[in-house]
Length: 287
Image (cartoon, helix red, strand yellow):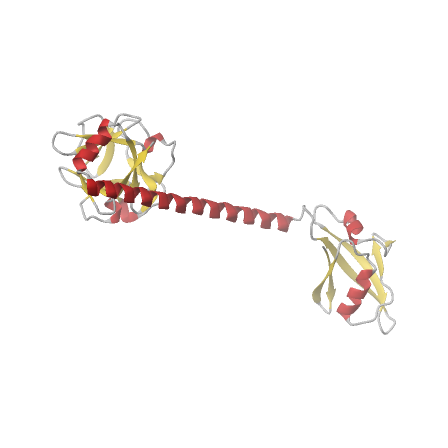
């Protein structure tokens, strides 16, 4: 489809023309638009008269490849037999170089990719919910200590997901000694998100990084990863009916996602217990 745009009575007017139509068919359409009988309409481009038997497809070969359009002069006699000159801009609507159309296509692709990402996140949340329900069923049928012992003996590894956003995990800033922790989007290959539980002799458990061998513990109000028993690393696990856990250090304080905010990089630290969703965590087995 081609477009012919011209100014009529100070208003921009557009005539749609099929690419295979000849330019002379434009006369009838133009005549209808302006409400006058036109017996002939002469087209000029760069000072030369154009053959009215040219199709708009052929005309498109002369269209500026940068702008996707061309300007030609048309001349006709009106009902009063006055010569009228008009300037018409022809635009190839299918031009691949049309900047506006390219930008629109880019926006469309970005939107489609965002929709795909959102769908993936929604699917992951459904998976996490199902995993939580399965975990909850296991709790109902087994003793918590037996489960943890079985997990320890089989050396299962976990990601620790926040109830505020089960697609986000407790994540080490790096695998080095003394580093802290924050919330970050789950990534299967992220070694900083994989942990193990170790049962202690006093019914508490320690959280060990599977890839650094360091243990999560409290230093004042902060979390840091250090060697075994170098800071407060012994946690009681309290289970909720929906499969989530609360980690409370035996000397006080729980693992807490500050302010319930779930953007990547949000700090995770120590806070007094209130059982809020930002203090509840889901253990998801990492195969």
